[in-house]
Length: 196
Image (cartoon, rainbow, N blue to C red; front, side, top):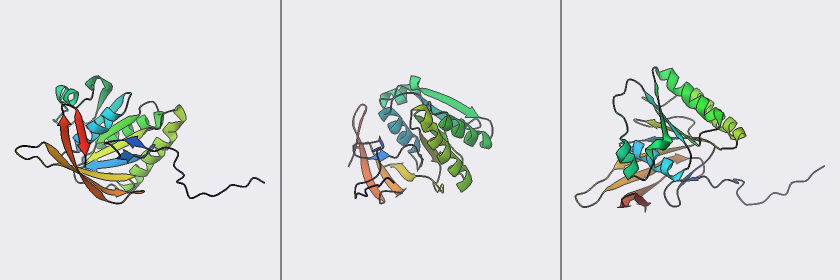
C-alpha cells in the first residue's frame, strides 16, 4: 500500500495564465468578463499568451474588433481567427469544440447573455479534456452583464478615463481561490499596462 504525505502547500502545480503583473487566471478553465471594456480585458489576456486565439462572435452583431487598435495594444491581429456563428447555440458549440480540441491556448466567446449552468459545465469539461493535446486551454466568455454560473472566475472591466489619464477599473467579482478585489489599470506606454 502506498502512503501519501499531506502538506500545507497548495496542490496547484500550475500558477495560472498571467494577466497583468501578479494577476492570473487558472488553466484549463473557463472564466467570464463583462463590463464596458470586456473586449480590452480579453485582448490584454491574449497578448500575454502565445499561439493562436479563436474569437467567436454572433454573426448578427455588427461591431468588429479593429486590427490596428489591437496592434496598438501589443497584440498581433494575425494571431486571431474570427468565427461568426449564425445562431446562439452555434456560439456555445463552437467554444466547446475548440476547447476540447486542445490545439488553441485561448478561446474567447462573445455571448449575448450569460450561459446557464449546464452549458458552462460543458465548457469546463471541454477545457479539461483539451489538456490531452499538450496545451491547457483557457476559455473566456464575454457577456454584457455578467452572472454566468459555473465560471471559474468573474471579472468586470470598465473605463475610468479622465482628461489627463487613460485608465480602467478592473474588478475580480468572484473567483474560486481568491477574494473579490479591484485594481486601477493604466496605460503606461504605447503597449504597456499596469494594475495597481
